[in-house]
Amino acid sequence: MISIIIPTYNEEKNIRKLQDNLYKLKGNFEVIFCDGGSSDKTIDLIDDCFTVVNCPKGRANQMNYGSKSAKGDVLFFLHCDSLIEDDVIIKIQEEINKGCKVGCLRLKFDNEIIWMKICGFMSNLRVKLRKIAFGDQGIFITKELFDNMGGMPDLPIMEDLEFSLILKRKKYYFKQIDSYIITSSRRFLDKGIFKTMAQMQKLQLQYLCGRDINEINKEYRDIR
Image (cartoon, rainbow, N blue to C red; front, top):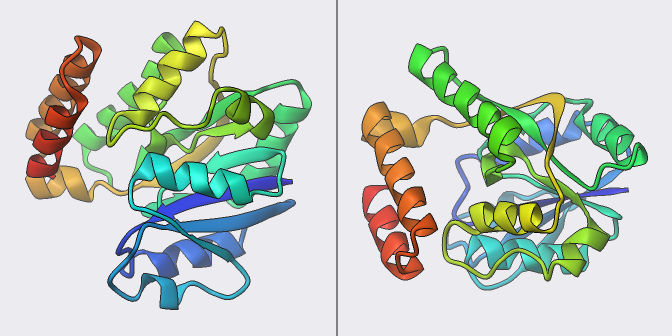
């Protein structure tokens, strides 16, 4: 079984649309919402058929809490503002049955703006060439490997980047399956596409060069 783990925090605007998407999925899976203390109606809007785990806020922390409650032997981490294809669970399980330990989906943004298409293309190319996947690409991993790695790195930001780097050092590489994950372009449109792209690249480079993660997190929060 595959455990879909979804961190939430004040997601009342997205939670219904996501659940409608989840109801259409095929295959053997469970859904675990890991809420970081939402002050809006997020919790009230989650249907009773899904599991809700309450935990301290922080995406890495919430994913780790969710993994502890997971009954599946595969963990599939999903952002609340993303949508997935109805056969993705089946495709993930097929890859796991072939021996795959970790992978992700193909990223596509939720509009037809050419620059967002290019951004999605470059994100997918990054997985192929650099073996680095970010959370909005729908990371999946066997629970055994996830536990052996000590879970998601306890960082306020860049946890997915660090997770990818740890996997590379241990000679585990992402398998990008033939299934799209549609993610929101809201952040890019609100702050400006080119400005947001440039700032994200700058912060990633600074992290790789050793800048203090708390300083990076503060600057990231300021530009969101």
